[in-house]
Image (cartoon, rainbow, N blue to C red; front, side, top):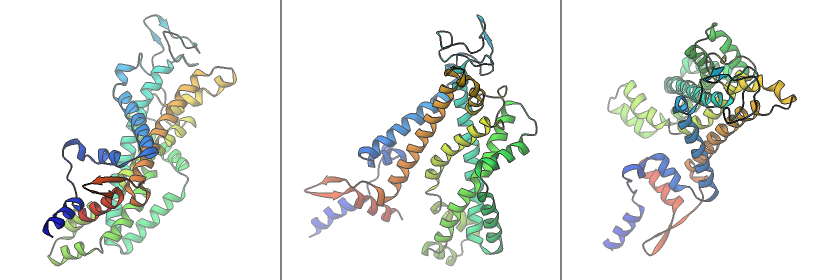
Length: 340
């Protein structure tokens, strides 16, 4: 009887992964199967490829994003793709390949600044609002709903005009665009965290912490916060793609980053509108393709992680364990229950 109990305990006990096998992303990848795994791998490959391009843009780009000439003289206007300019040149004389590569760095800088800033601000406001409640909660919810009611691109345009203040430096342009997108995303994280805090603060372990005399700040940040932010990585990946589209929309409408401040794909698309009607395809193809690939990679990654995080959406797998078989979904559910 004892040996049977030991066998059941071994099969149902949560297995501790060591090394890189225990990383959350690696565990999610190992849980995925079939088309789900293909989507996740494809998304990760695209994201990693563009992230490496952003980091190595000074090495990969043949010229600066604002360069109009090289060792052989001026680039020329609307030069067709050639050995010297594989992606051709724009009507202003910029090298398209260089601007696409440097635009990758701009896009990822905006993602990091905008989405990370909105996560911190939205999480803090959601924690305070959900835990304290009362009049403060009603005011913060009203403000978040008012901001959320505005079209995101329109709100980003207004905030970009207000924040920019005529700055034309690199960090001035990027900070103006990033902060305008930050304000758009704060209500999303606020609502996600607040709803989780309202649920978690009534749990038994929180009541136990109050009984033993733990301070409000300790309960909020040690017990409630850590159990209310599990879905934020999923929201981050989905909002990152929206941040790319918002940045491109700002640049396309003329409210983004100026070309002498940083390379930006939306601005390049705006300047390529007239080229398309004249049969010049290379000035619009490559910036547009970069936007599509980055957004596709982030969306595939976010949707796949969202499916894997929900036990109801996971594909059921059968794995051999001893002489019988165990459902991977049931094992995952038992692990989650033991972790809780």
